[in-house]
Image (tube, rainbow, N blue to C red; front, side, top):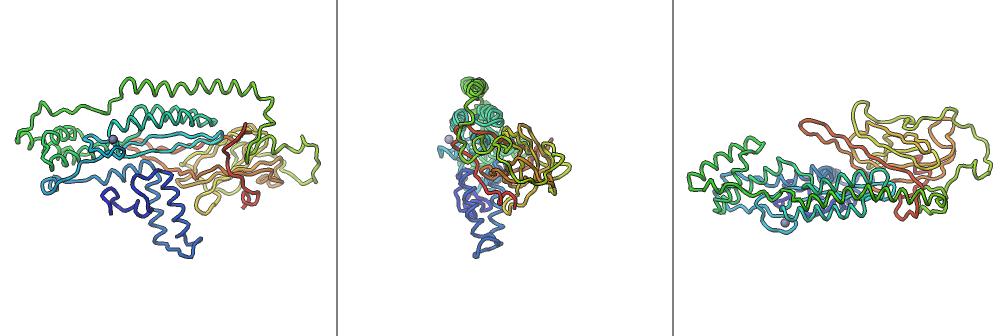
Length: 436
Ligand SMILES: [Zn+2]
């Protein structure tokens, strides 16, 4: 097992520890298919569970960060008996005295959906600044083209990238202490001393007391307290902060322009071709087409937007939220399905030009499907005829984050929209697939 893979999770998925979130996802999908008891003859439930356990940690950026940084643990005893390598930056490969494990976000929006992809690893301050800038520039170009999540996520991510990315103080402190021991083992006492001085303030009491002891020992051995302070390479420079601020607030201006342009062009909207998406060219309520349909009894009291249809598996007290804005001219039914079996966790109604929200979705991995139609049948739970159905690309992982002071759940937001020149689109699915 490699040094930076303490429990062999990367090995289980057959990827390197530098793998991107997408690499990990596709490796998992492939292996899960090969080993799942329901889909494969070479099924191995032990292997399947191992893969699932690895994926559960590695697919969550913060848990992955915790896992990766947990690889760096050493004791003073080890530092006295063997040479320990200091931590290297995952980008430039150089040993770095004050590393951080940072998660940066890149936002990609495809008109009606917005995804936020983590780019993470152990960084030196220099590479972190480069990566933060790169992620923000990518977000600037690709992030805000989605309504309504795009601009919100983009602004949030750019500001966060600009001010050092998401990082965990206790993981940073753990790595600084590891390096203090590594430099001690290599005889670089002055640097070890400076790092130990920083570790005295660590929130982990064991680290703080070990560090205090090491500082005292090194002072007795002749370390110079006047040189005990390290420059902080992680301070955000004015130029760096300003460029990210500019990128973040260039977005609303550009968006305002786009909305202006959009209202100017709305008279030609019906000629837009939404490839695979529900759009006004693909489906019109039958009252407008003038084609009469056989009379079927229909729903007499329409549900409100956000009203659950039938059985659901939502929690009454906690969980994540899903918000759907239906910017189209047809009513929609939304289904939230839990992976990997596609069990319907919740189905709800969202009227044309309305927003519906549900809460109480438990932690898990989900796909979101939708269908349009003009009339609900007598049960008020499905359409008489599904005029079009689709599924948002990708699987969403919803995971409750717990900090010492609060529990953070997620809100997913999608918009169903007639799409001007749609080139990237949700996947079409059949009415049967939606109803199953
Ligand atoms: Zn670097």
